[in-house]
Image (cartoon, rainbow, N blue to C red; front, side, top):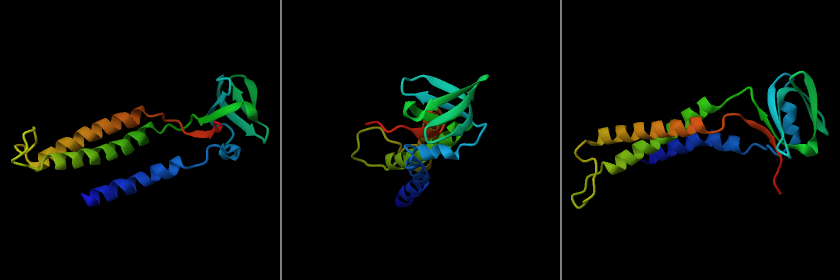
Length: 160
């Protein structure tokens, strides 16, 4: 059980480190390349979808349809990269974590106790209970992961 917890912690570290990247810095927009599909959401919630052109200290430029659009830095609430979708990656990560958690719950539930009056998996056998828990956790985790927003946020204004 201790090894399972260690594996889950180690697998979760990349997700946690990704969550710690600084999306509040305007400088993060310098990582964008001309031609990448982005969505810019203004503070008044107006959305612009198009291809990234350039960014300066004062504004971001993108091509929306046939016209060029510039949005002032103070009007930008969020910039999201549309080229990459992480839904499949999220489904794998959440599925793996869910499968591990389900297997752990199945292992704990399969411990037999003669004093226990509640339903348990003693009659099915320990390996079957672990398998059922792992499959249930895998399916549930993969579903949650696939439903999680899939486009990475490059910049988000800090809420005060």
